[in-house]
Image (tube, rainbow over all chains, first blue to last red):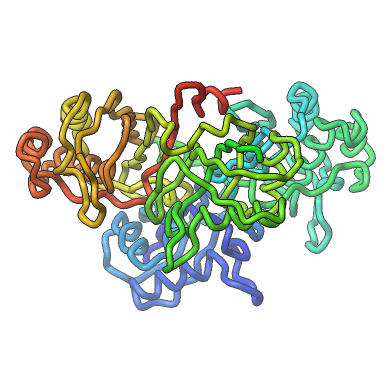
Length: 255
Length: 255
């Protein structure tokens, strides 16, 4: 039995999310089906975490166990021949069986793409939120800076999932202008259900003057969901990077 | 009666092309339907030229005539409320009735996007050809330079459309590396049926050593379709810019 570690990219538009659900097609089950076709085995594919319906991944990490005698680095190409074009395995290698895609992860980075201007870009429409209203980037970055550090993020959590603690540590949180896009990058040791989308919705509300200027401060101090802004739509969100003690998707993709 | 000039962007993936066809949905007919819904009029929308099935436009120019009393610059927003997300009217203005989107055009620019690397990019897959084989960019640019000037492009034309002359003048033809993409830009006073796709197919064949190194020279001198390479797939091709004596889409989009 060998454990195989993979990096998987997907366009989440047509999926109910990473995790297998009763109500539609999930990325996890599609890749598990490809593993079955390649190896003949019913493998269980463990991801670094779930992504919601419509959310994308540039670099999801997932592992599975196999008895197949294929060279570990060949799984990427073999699986891709059985996958639809909106899911690609970018990398595969053998890893120590102690590795777990979820429990070994140290940090994850998400990015959220906002396209500005009067009309939506037809080529970016699946991967960026179109914001036609003016946005105050300086104000959004002041709010983003407040997110860095260790906080109780209870105000930035949708109901529906049990968590023991809402305390998370964020090491990076900032907006950058990239051409016609405003891109929010946030990296941390864990994220609550819908946390990034509520952070983005809060900062977009502040940047467009639709919610009070101190909303981020209020939400972080009162822990009240009502102090934060709305949940931003899923299609602008991308799981960008996953870091482990011995493995960083960014380094692999840069090769 | 006023003549309205528009700039239209579209993701061509799900269309049979610009021009209305018996066998599927065309961009032209979808926009004409939106004009009908906005004005109540059965307008005829004239584009700067056709694009084939699956080809995209960042800046197609088209005109139509109307009796509607709406401010000319409001047509863009009004039409967009009746258009699907893969077609956007980016600009509208009143223009002299002597203007004709096709016959007044002086030059058009197309770009062709090639994504390199071992695996296809899930986010670029609708707008770029994935080339997994190594490509010699220098050789492709030597071939591209031969295209500049006034030539008989008979070797770069698919059969099926009558033309009086295959002589065209190309003012720009070059490849550039943009991150993981190789981008071919070609600008000229007119293009034959499939001309850009056959130029690209020829240069990709030369760059990957699958056809002779002198294929471009041979095709331009012998005028033989067989000397040129295969027709590259449509989904990497984008109508990028249209220039008129008094109007340049590039200047409008830069505003």
